[in-house]
Amino acid sequence: AQSVTQLDSQVPVFEEAPVELRCNYSSSVSVYLFWYVQYPNQGLQLLLKYLSGSTLVESINGFEAEFNKSQTSFHLRKPSVHISDTAEYFCAVSDRAGRRALTFGSGTRLQVQP
Amino acid sequence: DGGITQSPKYLFRKEGQNVTLSCEQNLNHDAMYWYRQDPGQGLRLIYYSQIVNDFQKGDIAEGYSVSREKKESFPLTVTSAQKNPTAFYLCASNSQSGNRGNEQFFGPGTRLTVL
Image 1 (spheres, rainbow over the protein chains, first blue to last red):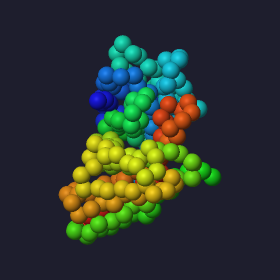
Image 2: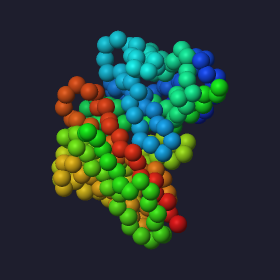
Image 3: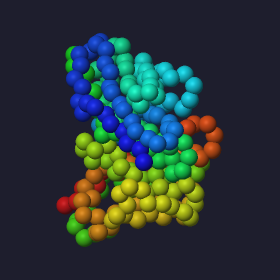
Image 4: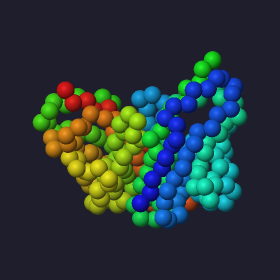
């Protein structure tokens, strides 16, 4: 069984400030790790993913996440946020075989203020 | 454009009624999934199907049913046995082959409200 914990339900931040959204997971098997973003009343969009290799992964819009196996974490960071980054962010894990469904954290609402 | 469509966008149901949510994909994906989203709880897996004519219960299957008669389609029926069906329902799909690491693609969702 797997579980994902997102430690902050809401993160308010001013525009152009850095931000970190925290994610910890628990699993007895190797997993893939994902961050998804959801804008109001929409589906989820993949932001970035860790499959293997380099532990630092980046998205095209400036977000990055680092896989830390010893701490079982996959925190999401951005050095300078924009108003348009306001959304809900979900961390998820998937086992590498079996049902391959995603197990989600409860989400973190990022609120960027001018 | 390839993608996943869900209909309707909004759905209202009276207590005691069954309703069916549609999910169609043209990505040629083998696997399809239904998730339920409630405020503050993230997404929870209802049912999934990895191949046509086969499906498996997820973590919260009680009160729901599905079918997978075609690769492109995975409808979800919310039955009257589901005690608290008001939620946002998301359909997803992924390819079971290749090297995408189980990345899932999501539809726009259906918001179901019980009156």
